[in-house]
Length: 419
Image (cartoon, rainbow, N blue to C red; front, side):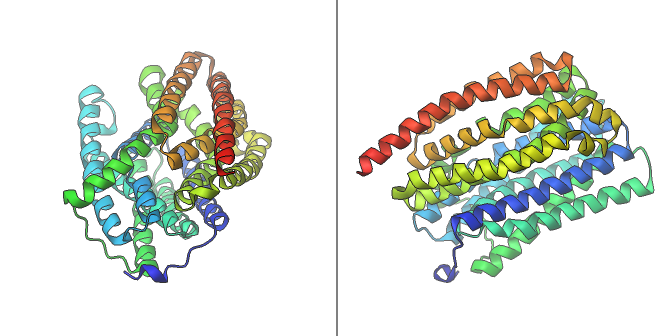
């Protein structure tokens, strides 16, 4: 693999390319739920949303920090092919194991849902593995300075998923959750296939997954602390639809999930900026302070613009799913979108902790904050999605103030040491 021939893009170009790709993914995802909402009942939408959240939880657990480990290893000068072979082997095995474990547990605890369907089992398994591989692909291409390749990858993946859902809606009304799940999984498969082609064209990479300890163990030692931190960031939003579907009602998950999914479009900017900030901080530690402030400014600019759009057009956007969604979820979307400022601060703090190896501190903060977010939202669930979102925003803002103070102190110390 001709590593020397790799042409790295600037951190800003890589970040913005990633954001455009994720916006395309989120936009097509929203269109998917619009089509699905008109193709079936609220109960099936709630079950599908819970299943999608479960897949995403499996991917976040199964990745085992392999993507972050690739960023660190490649940033330190290791051969990308060797690192990627180990990473893909690890996440492939972990994704399969976790997905099967979830399916068995789901069948035992809730046999009256779509988990009894063979189609559901197959698509859930494929979606979990493909989604996990896609995470590693994203971060591998960031490590290679080519985060902008996400744009065509997610446009094609989202387009395939949306087309499948539209075909199902056209052919028959009352689609079941397992059929909708199959449509959604097609997008993940397509994104992975495109990513494999991109890696081949960029660096001539041919996958040869290997679990040899000489490759896998060092990768895990780098990745697991990073993944524990990532889980504190992502799990609250993924766990909540499951809690709602199984503790409150599937309809509660159905009304919460579109608002959360759309708000995540704004949150994506700080999240992706944080990944690139982390990558650049590993490659050029001396520039971590300036990189952090630049990433935070761009996070607030891009994420803030997306939030304004969501706040202003919350009701019309949700009306596309149906009036009942707009009436139930518009207020929730506005409160969640307002949380982008707090989320940007949290991502900047976590990226600095990743680059500096301060995992214990960041994981402890994230764990406390995640538990508080889910507890507050479930506590407010009886009063509707808007009350849940307001409780979420209050807790997230309190957490952001705390980590913001800590972030400023760390950056000040780094600036002082550099002088």
